[in-house]
Image 1 (cartoon, each protein chain N blue to C red):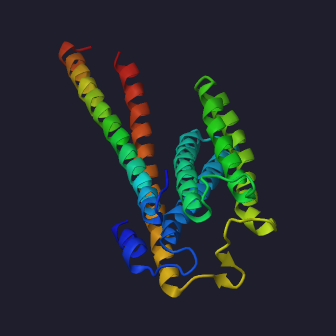
Image 2 (image 1 turned 90 degrees about the vertical axis):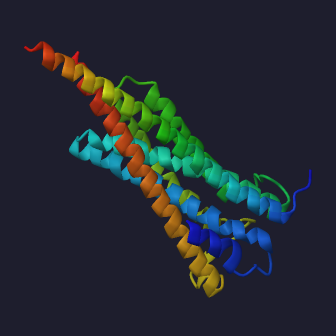
Image 3 (image 1 turned 180 degrees about the horizontal axis):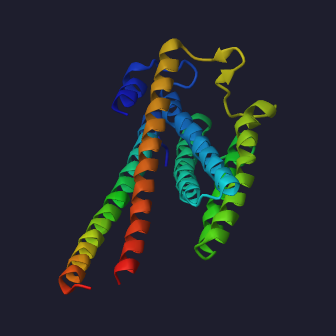
Length: 53
Length: 209
């Protein structure tokens, strides 16, 4: 398959864009998980507070 | 990044020798320099860990090397695309610069194999730090390879006489380099904050249960 120079330039920039996009998506998924875990821990702490020492 | 893209793809003049494919230079070289910088930063943090014994440097070193590996992979991919456009092949083993960068990249890929094969703790932190420090020796070799080798085909743009390009091209390169460095810094801070938060939540869960 032969590629034109313009297509190769576009491919180089597209690869970088896709990499950054995937990286940001992974970080976003991780932050969403941390947000869920924080909410769970807040509930756990509230439950412990209600029960008392 | 937007300004860098506009400058690189629209404003910068077309190279008389390479034509449109030279525009890959504005993304490939800043990414390669950022990869070197991240590996260097990882080594500095590793040295601080070994010197001061503060465990926070372990995570900082790991995240910097992780960033360096990502930018290293991008360097290899964009370099292969540029090679196809300029030389007609995706890869050539006759260029020392390419081979040495691949060695550097694979060396840091092995860093993760070492790190995740050990139990979490001070031993893992110290072993990873020593490995990261060994890797930093490859950076100047890889960087200077195109100047040391006589039979290279990889182009040398920055010589003792200064950058071998027009003022607009150099300005575009500087903006692109600044943009990629800023992107790497933001990604580094975000990943570091995420990992620290993860560790804090784990400690909190253990304390509550």
